[in-house]
Image (cartoon, rainbow, N blue to C red; front, side, top):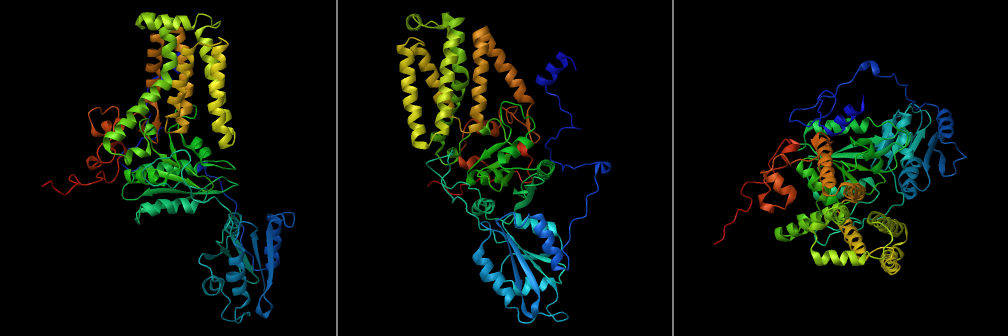
Length: 540
């Protein structure tokens, strides 16, 4: 492929239905080639001999080298042997002592040929625990042990019993860290998967809410749930999300941010195509709209897909404020976003190429402030912007009290010292400060990274070609954004429908009683979110 074809493929939208997923009203059938399937090895099975089971377990868990692996051997009535295995610190030892070991030791009569000779009877009649299941699959039991459960093996039985007795230390439910709001719920996700899914179910009390279990990572087997509302979400969207998650081939997955990079279509794009949030109420609203959500054990954030460029700029507080207040807040955020991206580039373009647009007295002031500055404007701006980014990174990595103090004091001292030393001009300090404040107004943290990268591109274009360079940059970036998709949904939706209510809702906040329809580009099974007349009362 030559350079012209590469440029054409980068900027010109090209849709190939045979290779790219597009969200449609019809169900998406997942096709595969059976010739690519590999014959899997037969899974290990539980043996009737307790000696074989014990030797296999010790070998798999490197016992006794692993000193946090506990194997407890028992002598049941009539001399029948058994043993339990669990990982210390992940299992609830009090539940093991009171509901498992004590129950096994008190089985009334246990001999060959008698009534208590079936494996399922042990789990059904004698183990006093809510989640116990008998299985022949040794791998399933080992996976449960690695996840904080317990395995029970009894001599003469060809099934083992897996117990869900997880009780490891975890962070309690607290306020969201990065998505704080004055109004609305104040609960945020933590690292426990079941606690996170329960927070969502506490809001959406319906049996149609599906929590489909997934496992990612061939070795880590990190558990998660794919959540959607079955009578709202499009089947093709659910199938595509399931297909992408099940197609992840890696050994270890630690955090949900890694899964995001596996799932998004354009990894090297400046803007993320998947929304992440730590708020259960935001997840609940996304599910009601017909989207799909992924929760992962060990991660305090959820992934929402598909998403659009406009939705990444929305704040959760917009749903709880009155319409005039929410619209004012959204307009201020949009202005802050544009200023954080374009203000430095526009300043350079104006001072270097288009001085005629500056009022005369302001031009005199700018010239006087730069009279003794030895560096060109572009070097001056890059130095101050780099210094600001260094202060931001240092503040993030310092403890909270020290970090906030470092950001304020460091910025004041650095700016004042730079002006006093005549390294930069005061007007440049103002430009960088406004740009930094605008970047902090961004709702999504990953989106702020995108804006910081774009700011440098527009600085280069503005310093080289003035307003024309900035216009070319906006045009090219719009083409690139127009080509992007998020799970089959064009990233700039609903921009083509300029007169629709969805477009007005993307820019401004509609009244809560005017949100009758779900987003049309999601092709939901039920597009009606509320009745046409939802306020069924009249003003007398």
